[in-house]
Length: 202
Image (cartoon, rainbow, N blue to C red; front, side, top):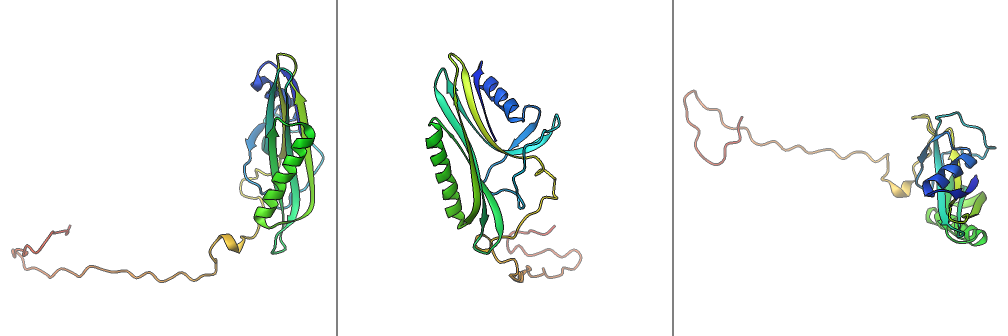
């Protein structure tokens, strides 16, 4: 989803107006980092969120001032890994370029993320918006991929671990060899220990 707000009194005001336009004005947001989306991710029509909702977002915002322009975009792709597992990734971008150039830059970002992970695309989509700030005002363009149900505190589905990045989980642990210090010789009552070095006894 995207939104613009060209008439902000300051950057914060413009951003807040943009969030309202986006439908996130009454929500509490957690900005997500990283490329991977939750397993089972699918696109659904926007829905109204209750006041105070806690939502995870991949969000990009780009600011303009006094007649200048800015663009923001978000893209996702459904993919297949080399091991035939399904997954989805996301890319965002903020620029001072026009709409068309930002679309191209965002698609390149998405392609790089795919190449880094050796993923094959099955479908994708891109959303970009451009704002021109009003005279003597601040403007913002916002693009967001909103995950309203991802913060399920432990019940989110996760996928297999890709073997190239971790050690084998089936690897048997190596036995630990414990070495003990030799026992000290027993002393008779009243017998003094010979001073043969530091004494670490308790």
